[in-house]
Length: 161
Image 1 (spheres, rainbow, N blue to C red):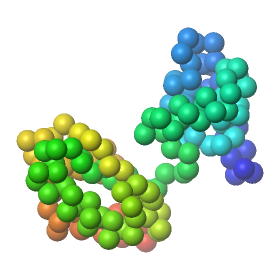
Image 2: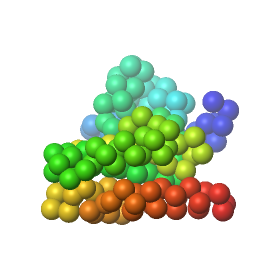
Image 3: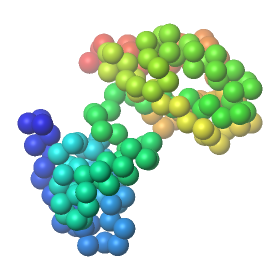
Image 4: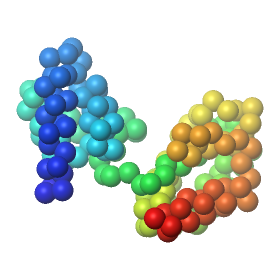
């Protein structure tokens, strides 16, 4: 929590600007995550108080939407498409490769903090399956070798820092 205190001024600015807006919760959550990189636990209480909501209501919304985070993000985010088209073209094998290579389930952050793995259920690249998104950049017709190289590149970049 003490580390989160540094985010309090940003949280308070967002709340002051947005709290009277109809349907303010989602814009507030997006603004805080945009500024901090995640929704700190400290923000949940501040939001609940400002909007006269329960902590459970705020946490429920955060947990419902898969793009909200409650922990600091990894350096890179890899989103592997798991929809039907990508499944039929080898996405499940790529997912298994990622689980093995990163030592993760289908969700989570690699131990070295290099990659956040998130399954998605359509990236809109069905004609080029299997597809993934790495830090917002789409990669299509991904092979096991290409995936291995992308992950290795992310990890090497982290070591160089």
